[in-house]
Image 1 (cartoon, rainbow, N blue to C red):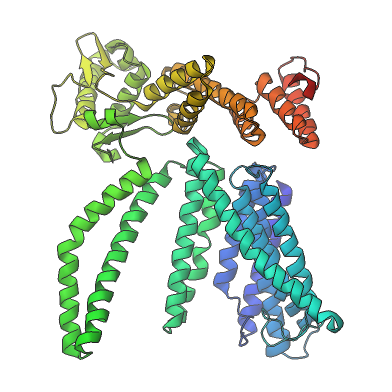
Image 2 (image 1 turned 180 degrees about the vertical axis):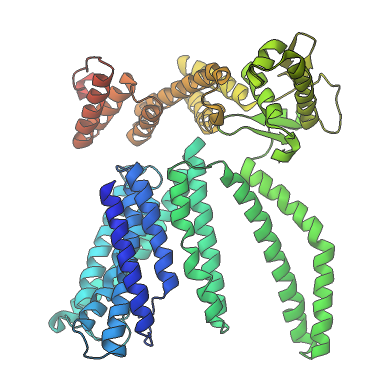
Length: 594
């Protein structure tokens, strides 16, 4: 932890130095303008990197964010120093050309660190061994570009009109070839890192999928911001462009930090939904105005009267089409974020999702928090879901919801909470009052035949997949189990982790999920896909660090495919875990046990 925050302190010093030097240096040369906004933006990388690195020191993503922040802050300080020494006060201090020389290549390791973040996000590991080739390609590109940039002759492209003071003039042909190769490799590695993110997302489930969503949304926001930056710069609004493009980069560390530390992961679904709607509406309005005002205006002339008339026409078109377009975008966003309703959910018109965050959907739309009127009504429904259709005595519910309060008062409160639950599930009163929630004077229960609940569907799917696996139907089993794995979006009611009434079902769902992972790992090993098996074993150990069979299977798989160093480290981790609980460690597995 001390190292991470010490580096943040260094980043602060560099940011301040860069900001001051760039102000007093009055930058006038292209390539040396690093303003205060630049320093503030990349200081965010350092802070988020330090937070992640101090909490998860073994995850390299935090350290990579720190490295990016330091590289860019150092670039700002070097630019300020070079400005001051070479242009503002020529000859006042030495080393201006050296500072510009370092500035000319310092961006390369920063970009390499950014690419690595995409390759390693979110768990700090490459998805599989073949991706090591991409990491090696990136390293080769960095070495070639860095070495060639350091000694290339002529003016330095990233440091204005200054010539390279350390140029090696005798080998310029070879140097330019290395520089060209490195310049080609970097985009290839960047494209591969984005592909890596896409492939991770396709096979991810649960919390990992939501983590990837955070980074994907941040990347899209940065792309849109820099698209606007380029357009505004091209039409002469560079001042406005500077306030849109570079500051948007802060979205990347913020998203990475939120995702890795798992802070409000479920909020990303709402963010994506609103972004799709807002972005789609903005694009629709822009397209209408461009088509009518610019397109039609070019045909009828550019007079003030015609432009005004066309603007009125465009406004009328937008006003007429706005609501239908918004409704269409809303449906698209809903399906993109939350998926299409299952047949059972379509029949019922309502669905409850409890794996991870607690959410209720009506006709595919998320029920907003204000619709509940009180937290107790939500908790009542949660308790009934945890009972799995079994009756819950009214006395039990009153004690769980309002402990140590007068029975006469809480009886009325329970009746009000029950009415609220029924109103949320069926606001239009399409069904009888007992259609979803059955209650009498003694107990209350859910009718699961009419009310789809995701944890019930997950447990049924897990049981079906494991039964196929046990029967030797490996092909059908793997398809079913993989779908079940993706359906597990998190532990049952994660926000109610310490409630006794939620524990039994949470443990049952976790146990089923671990069994699914274990079966998928076995199927992957049988199909000679060790990377998939390793990924499943690691996921099991994330959920249960003392699972001895998963530890030993992981070590054996790594040893079998030649990852001997990793196998030894994992065995030591296993032995340490066994020591924590006072259990003897099994001998190191050998491939002969396969």
